[in-house]
Image (tube, rainbow, N blue to C red; front, side, top):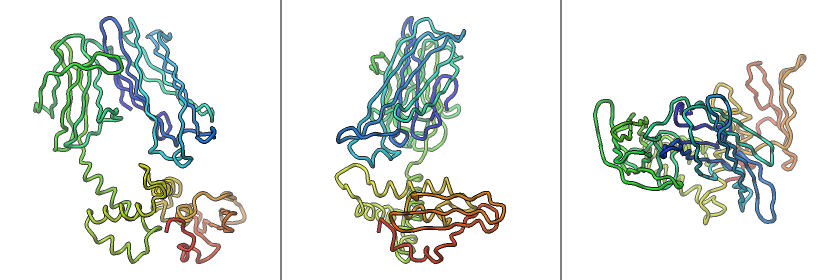
Length: 379
């Protein structure tokens, strides 16, 4: 979360975020609201041939006395054609709007997000103690999409926005005491708000920088972190290759592990491209399911090693969620154990915590993990 002037929060929901900016406009204060929700955070119900989710966003602005001075309610219906997309964190709905508040200096803002179908609700309050003067807060966009967070890829182009009641407005980029760039901004319009914009290229040296807007009277600053996405991509590629253990035969994976990062990336593209059930779509559903299972196993089955390397994690990645789990974790006369049932496959697995340290090992059927490839869905 960004404190003070800029608000960003996941509201305890994985893929949901808000970013709110206050911009001065003569005698009024303009609030620019950017919102993103992941399909994986909502419940979708069948609606004829589509899948439909409905969510509600309530924003309340409170003055210093705690009284509501402005409220906005947005309710949106979101339709998806494929059920699989309703489960994907990467599938998002982005929405933005603006509203005005008069005679507001300080207070707080409350944001309530609710999923209508599940009645799940999350709420967030952030103090707005620092009044906006004649220069608004700094907004960063890339390819007409809001940048959630402060990480920018080195060498990438961005549009930086801020408003000012005094013309001209100057953009500057600095690192420490070194001024890197200073330019006069051009005027633009965003969400109906007159605003200043400057397009710049993020430096190729990674690290922390300060971007600022100044009108000669006031200055607004924001810290950004420039990162090397190529390096991060290479780290992700190595991770994705390591996690192919359930999809690629051991001898082939061993050969692949010795290849260059470029060859590994090419292999990933070719391998998952060959297992894409809908090549004409933007997403590879099979790959998404595979790595989402890996991620869930890492979060859920932590037993001193990576979750997907544990017995329960391996079974989960291979077969997905069981149809039923009998959990006997608190036993007085026996070791803690769990039984997983996959009725549609005719499979039943027993995991026992033999050493009472939370490590559940597969005891029945013995040797199943040696022949698991016969059951794997993605080969």
